[in-house]
Image (spheres, rainbow, N blue to C red):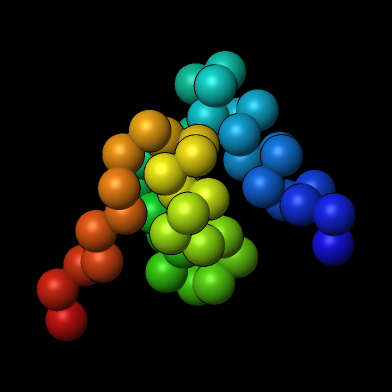
Length: 50
């Protein structure tokens, strides 16, 4: 999909429209990967406890 979603998430995060919680939720549903989370936020992805 040419990383369109990832690029939009990066732009929205950089502009303050998205925060780490929102990016985290995208990883949880599979729209982004843990590596994407690291690239976007600069922090390692930590999966929530079940």
